[in-house]
Structures are given as structure tokens and as C-alpha cells.
Image 1 (cartoon, rainbow, N blue to C red):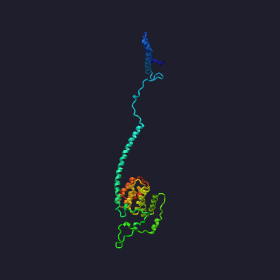
Image 2: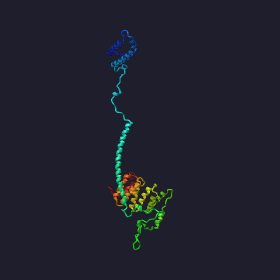
Image 3: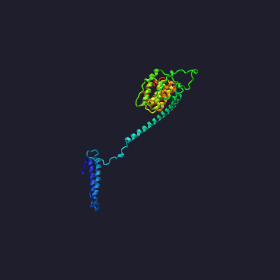
Image 4: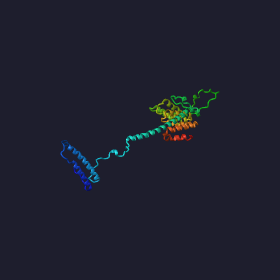
Length: 330
């Protein structure tokens, strides 16, 4: 074993230490037999202890000498280091995000309950429109009393063309006013007959398209009967929402807002996700305004804004502006 020894007082201290150690190692007198057998083992143990003590002395004497000091044999344990917080893991991040999502869901649930309560009140008020709209005008006819469609469209003269009722002295009074038959001009008959009826594999689509053409040509009574046939015969067709809405438009454009309101309300309540349910709700407000029911018109417009915000700023933006312009709502 080679030990580096410095000079000066430090070297003297080490030398004295070595002399004392060597003295302890020198045998004194003969060793007993048992001690002689264990001498190599004891000597090895003592040598290791001495070497450890020499290293400690050398570290003390030469604390910063290059190549003169041994590395420390005892190092601070990990437990002696100051405690640090654990780094965030994926699990803690997920738990934090779940807490945030739960808080947002609670707020959304509260807002949803408030909206449902508001909708329930609006529906209750709209439910009264059907009963109130029938007596609001003399032109309104209950849907149950509308004539059923025959094999062909009956040409109906507009209300302005109806003849004055005959005097009792000349002609007995009719028991059913709706049984009055009026004559139409040959020009009107020819104009209606000139409108071509589509013919394709989809008969329901053809019937609806023909009703639309009649309405577009302003033959409103004929369009009413044609569209009523579509509604009655094809209630499950893809065009049913279109047909009900256009039926209401035909009555509205014919100066019969009471009957129009019934069909608009029916189309909206039957399927609020229908293709023309938003149109029917908007024109329900128009019909109510023409019936001088401004408050109910405002209710319909408010329901339209709440239920169809996308249509309000999109496809029906111009129609909504025109419909609400003459109405003053609180």
C-alpha cells in the first residue's frame, strides 16, 4: 500500500500516527495456538480499519490537494435533501381538467333549465293561438271543415267575385253557405289549365310541385286545394313540411290570416326540426299581426329568435326584418 505523505507539521503528524499503528501491529511474545490461527483474519480486519483512519487523516490534512485526498466514503443520504413537490403528471392534469369541465357543465345545466322554463311558457302561450285565431276573422275556416280534395282541382272563385245573396222572396235561403257554387271566367279556367303538372316517378313530389306552381301564379284557391291534397295523402313524405307551410302561405296571400295561422302553427308543432318549421313560425307572427294580435305576434317572433338563431342571421334574415318592421314589441 502506497501512502502519500506531505512535509511539515502535517507530515510529522502522519508519521507519528504510523509509528503508533505499527507498534500495535508488532507481536509481543509467542502467540497462542488459537490466536495464531486467527491472526491473518484479525490482521486483515485491522488493516482495513487502519486504512480507513489514514484516509480520514489524509482528508483532514490535505482537504483540497490534487491527488492527495480520498473521496468521502460517507455521503449525505437522499432523505437529508429538502423535500420537493412532485412534478405534475398526466393523471393530475386530467383531474384538474375534469374539475373544470364539471364546473362548466353545472353552469350549462342551470342555463338549460332556465331556457326550458322559458320555452314552456312560450309554448303555453302559443297553444292558445289556434283557438283564438278561428273567430278572429270571418274568412277563417277550421281545418276539419275544409273540403276534401277530389280527383281534380275545383276552380274556386275568389271571395271578391262571389255574387250577392239572393233575396228570400226570389230564392230560398241556402242552409249551407259553403255549398254555393260560383262560375269562373273562361280566361281563368284556361290560365289554370295552362299550368303544366309535373310527371315523374315520385307522385307526391309532382303533386307538391304543381301546388307550388299554382301558388306562384297567384291562383291561391286552387293552390290551397292542391296543397291540402298533398298534406292529406302524403303525410310522411319528405315534402310534408314544405306542403304545410306553403298551404299556410296560400291562405295568407289570399287574405285569410286566421286559417293561415292554423296551418303555420300545425307545421311548427308537428316537427320543429322540419325543413320549413322556421318559416311557419315566422309567418305565424305575420298572420297574428294581420289579425291585429300584436302581442301574440311578438310571442311568435320571440320564439323564432330563440329556436332558430341560425335562420335569423342566415336564410330568413331579410324575411324576419320585413315581418317585424311593422310590429312594436317590448
